[in-house]
Length: 66
Image 1 (tube, one colour):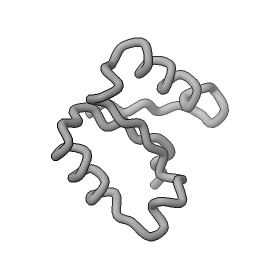
Image 2 (image 1 turned 90 degrees about the vertical axis):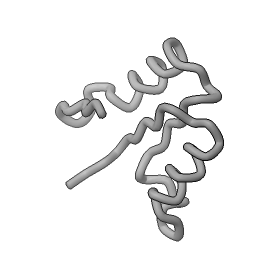
Image 3 (image 1 turned 120 degrees about the vertical axis):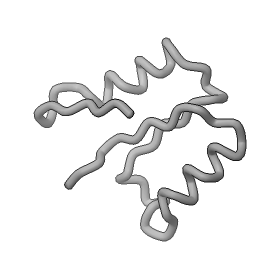
Image 4 (image 1 turned 135 degrees about the vertical axis):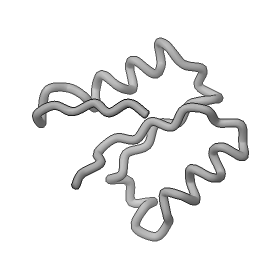
């Protein structure tokens, strides 16, 4: 697990998808933001479980707050 912490508005949300696209296989990698409306009615654990069962290796999560 790697955490990227910095002040708001410095470009984390822009940088991370660009880094993923350049360095990871798109079939093995999923980028999600916890602000997706999907998570209003669905649990993150269910998404992660399905992703792993489908052969996913790298799950990148954006917008996690305390």
